[in-house]
Image (tube, one colour):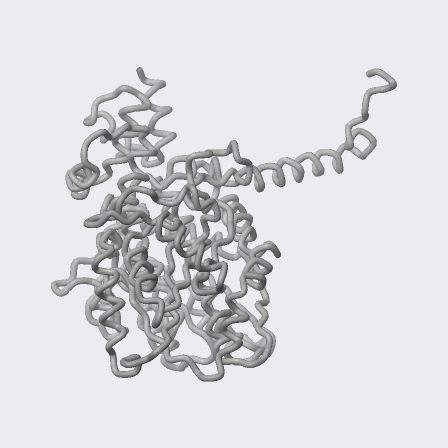
Length: 512
C-alpha cells in the first residue's frame, strides 16, 4: 500500500474490535439506506422494503426478534418527537381552555376492531357520511368547532380522504389534521378516488396550503419502512398510538407533555414465537386471553392477521367478531383445546388477579401450552407464572396512572406484533420481507400483490381485484410459478411440502 494511501479506519484496531466495527457500520448503512432518493424511488416510505429485514424469511426466531427490535427502534429517533413538537399542532391544543369532547369514526365500523374490514377503506363517500353522522350524536351536536384527526399511514386511504375533503369544504366548523408516515407527498396516491375526481394527493396539497396559516395540520414524519413491507399495523400503528396519546394528554392537561420510551426486552419473546408457530404449523389455534385494554390490543392484533398473513378465523354462526368475551371462550373454545393450541394471557396487577388465576387453572387443565404477559409495579412474583410454560414479567416503576397505562399498552402491542409476525414468518407467510399470503380485499392490497409479482395490469383495477378476492394463496402460488416456470399444481405440491417460498423455489429448481 502506498505511503500516501489512507489507512482503513479499522486497520489499527485489534481483529475482534475491527470485525465488530465493520458489522456495526454495515448495520448503520442498511438502517439509513431507505432515506436515499435512489432506494426504491417510486414507492412511498410505508411501502418500501426495510433493508434491515431483507432475509427475515430465513431467520431463526431469535434473529427475527432482533430484526423487529431494530425496526421498532427507528420510531424513537429523536427527529420524530422533534417533528411533532415543532409542528405547531400541540401549541394549538394548548390554547384550548376547555375539555374536548371526543368521538371516533373507523372504516368498517366497530367490527373493524375485532375482524378484518378492508373494503370500506376504499369508499370516500362513506367516510364523509360517517363523519357527518358522528357529528350529530348528542355530545357533539351543535358544536361550533370540531378538530378532526384523520389517520392514513401511507396517505392512501380513500375513506380518510373523503373525510378530510368534507372538513376542507366546511372550514367554519372543522379543523382537519392528517396523521401519516409518508413525508414525500409527491408519492401520495394520485389516482382518482372511487366515485369522484379527487385524489389523495390533491387533498394533501390543499391541506399543506392551509397549514401555512394553521387552518389545517399535517403530522407526517418518516419512521422508516415496516419490518414486513407495507405492514403498517406495526410501526405505523405504534407511532399513531403514541401521537394520539400525546395529543389527548395535551388537550386535557395544562402541564408539558413528554413521552418516555421503555424497552420491554424483545429477547423474551423468542420462546413465545416458537410455541405460537408450532400451533400454527399444526393447523391449530392461538388464543389471546386478555383483560381490560390489554385484551383489546389482543383482539386488534388478531384481527390484523387475516388480511396480513391470510390467517383463517373461527367460524362462529354470528361471526367471530361477536364471540370475544371470556364466557364465549369457556363455552366455545376451551372444550376443544389441546396441547397443540397456544394460549397467551395478557393482564396486569390492576386487573382482578384472582379471576385471571381461576381462568388460567381452567386452561391448564386442557393444555400445557399456556403463556403469560404480566405487568406489575413491584418486584413481587405471580403465582399464575407457575401455570405457564413461559412468562414475560413487565416490572414498571411507580408512574402516574395514565402514563403507566400508556407504557403497558405500548409494550404489550410491540410484544403481540413480534409474536404474531414472527410466528407467521416461521410458518412461511413471508417472502424476503414481503407479505405474500395477504388477503386481496381492497385496492391497496391488490396493488401490493401486483407489485410483488411485477405484473403490469392494464385493465380495470376494480375488476381484477374482484377476481382475486376469493383466491386462496394466490400470491405464493404465482411467485413459485413465475420464479421456477413450474405448473400451478406442482407449485401447490411444493408449498405443501415446504411453506417457506424461497425454500420451495430452491427445491423446485434443484429437481428440474
